[in-house]
Image (cartoon, rainbow over all chains, first blue to last red):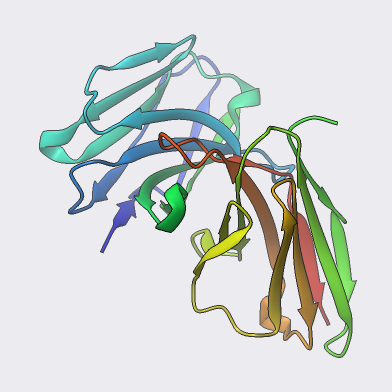
Length: 117
Length: 113
């Protein structure tokens, strides 16, 4: 069965600190996708990134960067120079194909990040 | 409107009521999803519709009844709910081909009294 583990449940940092959110996954599929979503207090899940299992290149988008390592089944997310607006719950997710081409997302439990001024 | 919208945003209902949650996507997607998010539990997939056909039903009690009349609209009909059904119900949509990313609506926060 597919599983996503976010070992950290809550992190609190001071503005401008760097913070890394860990994600470890389990799957028997050879083709899969990994995702990160952000959920601010408003409740909406905001899509951040999707990574194909065959693409292990690290990715950087502004202050966000992602480190995908198949050897350790990890897909970690780093926020550089954190800001108060980064405060949210962050979810890591793994896709599982379903009938008809749609995908079922298996989510981790989420990690609450609080950035203090 | 753009993206994925959900109405109502908040709902309080008694255990004997019947209500419906509505989701609409304006992204040209052809798959839609219902998720449930309870306190202290991971997000749980409830239903998946692909090309208006239900392809996944994750052992959800029959008091939840989904309906997908077309690729842009998804409903969740609720009847005789229990207090433990109180949660945030999130709708998402995606393209079915190529592992399309799921985009979520703002959710309906449901309280069952």
